[in-house]
Amino acid sequence: MEFEHNVDLSRFNTLALPGRAAAYQKITGAGQLTVANDFAGRRFILGGGSNLVLNGDFDGLVLHMAIPGKRLVKEDGEAFYIEAGAGENWHDFVQWTLQQGWPGLENLSLIPGTVGAAPIQNIGAYGLEVGEMLHSVNAWDFKNQAFFTVDRNNCRFAYRDSLFKQEGWHLNGQIAITSVIFRLPKAWVVNTRYADVTQELAAQQIAAATAQDIAQAIIAVRQRKLPDPATIPNCGSFFHNPLVDSATAGRLKSAHPALPQYPQPAGRVKLAAGWLIEQAGWKGKRLGSVGMYEKQALVLVNHGGANGNDVQQTMAAVQADVTAQFGVALTPEPVFL
Ligand code: EPU
Image 1: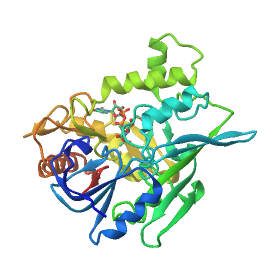
Image 2: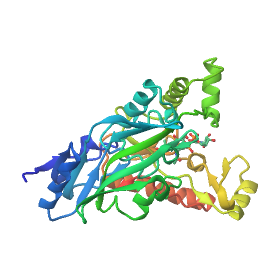
Image 3: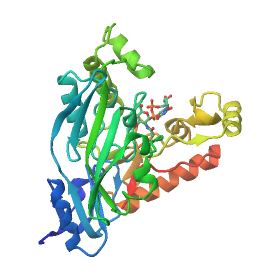
Image 4: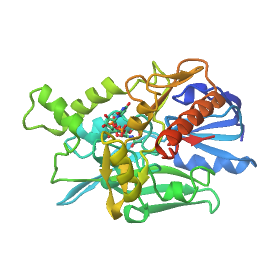
């Protein structure tokens, strides 16, 4: 197999960080994945590159997932089952389901990236996580040279987490997700739990919102708060919202009554990392070419010319300041290559 060599990856990651792949292959069909057998070194499975920090050159093989396709697999009394290829653009896929009259994914409009990457970190926004609407995941196992399917119940979905992350399968290139099957219930329930969305609908004077209305409201909220990677390179939220125990949450509540806290199962509490970062003085602040976004402090941005090392320096500085001020550790959301 003749791979492409020394391929520029800066255009394939939304932080626009520099780096080259020793070998590169675009994958447009699942059957093509056996090409990896012809390469002895490390491999990395690349989707939309919207959750990636590239740390310079990669000495392995990059498999760029571009498997297309979207179709209704089946329909029963309760739900529509829709399969999409791993390489489909996530936002375009969501808008297509809405146009077909299959609501359910509207709250996840405008999230960058691909369908195949969505289950890995269980993408979520505005009161919905993709795992809630997923039926199963189809993948190729490079070691066993076989396709396999993981049903939703075995995906171990949690906040920005899944089996695919927990087992390290994604990071070490052990498997490649080839397609995802969604289960969209026919009994559609409007999900406007998130205040930003209800406020946007009220501002637009929409009373009984359709799924399309929700999608439009979310697109408007996201466009207002989050930078478009095409203009200001970024990879969305850079840190997880930290989960702390109730004692820590109580201590922080007394010291900082304005800190947004969201109660979770098992007595744990999720804290708003954006608030912590803003209070630590990082909203709109930069260290060299990398800073935290002026309208949303949780989003790290490349102001131009940054490399992976610059990103890690700003990341470490933000983490140190938040820990010093609040005693809370921030963990990064993206994958580091
Ligand atoms: N906040 C601040 N200052 C900031 C940013 C936020 O005080 O600079 C406060 C807000 O006022 C609000 C709270 O923090 O009270 C939460 O902020 P926001 O609603 O903007 O959401 P987030 O918690 O910062 C999370 C997800 C986003 C998702 C939004 C909406 C994570 C790590 N991030 O952000 O996901 O779009 O909720 O549901 O969970 C992503 O993962 O890339 C992403 C964009």
